[in-house]
Amino acid sequence: GMILGSNGIKMGKRYPEYVVNPNDVVKEYGADTLRLYEMFMGPLEADKPWNSDGVNGAHRFIERIYRLYTEGNIKDLENKNLEKLYNQTVKKVTEDYETLNFNTAISQMMIFVNAVYKEDIFPKEYAEGFLKLLNTVIPFITEELREKLGHNNTITYEPWPTYDESKTTEDTIEIAIQVNGKVRDTIRIKKDSSKEE
Image (tube, rainbow, N blue to C red):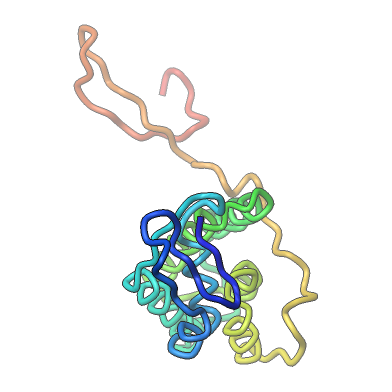
């Protein structure tokens, strides 16, 4: 597997002689980028070849997060469009952290960031809760962004965000329309629709 230590990052069985010094990566990109990249590479126990493009991708994701928190769309208002995805994100990230599945937790957070970019309002409640989720992976930038939200205490001791289970499920289901045993179409209906409907 990949080894991170004072001697560098060894790239597993394929390139045992190739070593990347983590200090060089931190100098160029920052510690948060290195942490994010390592956690996103895959399951902890898997061999992972080093990929400079992946480091750049991790850095770009952090830059997107920074812009999200500094471009003025955070408002003390609701946004129903983000309600279900926010609750799903808190649930999935919480469960994935508990099982050390950092890569899938980060994937979910990327999905959330993409969704927020499509909205005009990023509710402050969600912005603060999301920072706490991110703090496990990128602690330095999240402390700075929390300060930009008007807080002067550390995020470390803030309570973990909670989710509403009822807001994590789909409201609709997809059913197939069959004629003479062959699927002709699919439709989406409300989950609690009656058989007659």
